[in-house]
Image 1 (spheres, helix red, strand yellow):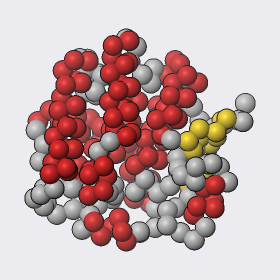
Image 2 (image 1 turned 135 degrees about the vertical axis):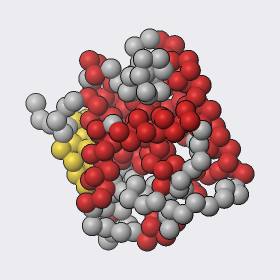
Image 3 (image 1 turned 90 degrees about the vertical axis):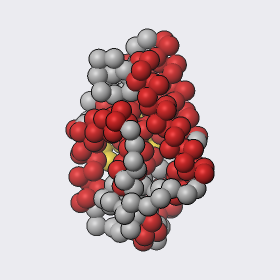
Length: 221
């Protein structure tokens, strides 16, 4: 059986690529990466060779193609059931799916005003945008509520590392880049995510990339 292939963009900047990559790493399966840097001549054409949406990430597994990070996570949970990508118990699993879908569809101000750049540490700035304040407060509340209800036995949202943590890992990197002043529980969760070996591997890969895209670099300065 051939290895799956994951098509991704810059590890420094692509939050959606990071989510799918972390999910695939969590299965323990060997896989190949196809790296297509953003904002280069021919970027879209290269991605369209693999992804019908023209966007990354895209997972190729034999004759199956799955795009969109949450759909990739769901496919991997079915493809590798022993990996335990979702929590085992039905209530926890339903909650994990709900907060992952909320991440997938929401937090527009966070995405717009705090673009991902895992290599950067930006100067501390006051948060003046009401929508951004609301996004940050919602995420901190969501993390605290999830850990209080389901997180016994480990440092992650559901105790054990899961797809939900993969979905929120890029938010952790954003909060680190922009030096968000969060409470002790959120800070401890962020430390656990940064210490995860797969997250560490992703960040090391980002640091090795040669590309510097100004629109992402400028907002983190």
